Image (cartoon, rainbow, N blue to C red; front, side, top):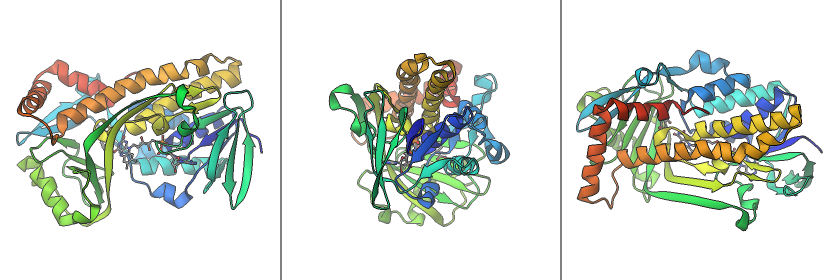
Length: 390
Ligand code: FAS
Ligand code: PHB
């Protein structure tokens, strides 16, 4: 088998890259480890930057998003029993974010790919990239017990943090940067109306909490939890009680409770691999970097990398120029590190750290007080939250 670009991973990175390449007639094959149902069942991100919306539209997967997505012009920070609204639109000259679940983004992209008759091989095991330091890369994998090979021009490593592509790069050729946080996020989905029409990020002595949503009928909530917490220790009742204790009374009173239909704990980390290009192998999205979800950047950074790699591949195939591919890593990392900084800053400001001392706690309180009373500080948060320029 031969194609132009083998994409490892059918998450948002791989699917979006595949659809954009299809718009310029570049052939791709996606190799995905899990089956289609598992892929479409994942619950992940919920907030899309304007740039991500534009890219999804360019890929032909923006229709349902425009019809069902929820435009949000502000967020609230909650601390000292009060809500403080950050007017994103007013502070950024009218920009906003769109609340639309990653699960739906994935479904829209899968539907687009299938409608175009493009190839995704699900339950591909033992995927392995080869020869990417030369001119003739290829990928081997196992499907139904048979080892297969796909020859290609390029390999896009869109296989997430635990994927094979970054792991296939010689240790001496890659450098990583990492920060692990001493807590996790316990998240639930429930078919109940959201507590507020916008997101609420709460800093409370008992810990962080986030009120988000997927629609006017479906809410997404998170509370900071211990890393050694077991999901079995968190009944719905305990979750609702803890969430309401961490919100200001006016917000807690509006929380509508109900049975959760998804409940999970995710660890938080900051991680960046450098560089992102190794000959004819490119790392994209979570395969290259991880951010704590506090800044709502993970999915948007994946789209950011895809944009730069798509530009590079378009220059290669359309203009016969390698310039864009040579610039990919530097361009993508410049934007990645600013989002890593913002996500780290939001996490440090909004969470309670088990080992914090009195001085650090007072600094966190001063940070919040300055942020909500300074237009310059609020504008800095707003321009990062809606997405920095490309
Ligand atoms: P993904 O991890 O989504 O996709 C990688 C794909 O590659 C997967 O389908 C995987 O099955 C496949 N794969 C892996 N190894 C393979 C192999 N060897 N062979 C073939 N296929 C392989 N971001 C936010 O902005 N907000 C959030 O609230 C948020 N919550 C999150 C919660 C959790 C539990 C996790 C894990 C992430 C969360 N994220 C969040 C980040 C998330 O949205 C990612 O940024 C986004 O999924 C990145 O997309 P991809 O780069 O496509 O990676
Ligand atoms: C979500 O809705 O899942 C969500 C929203 C904002 C975040 C993180 C997660 O910062």
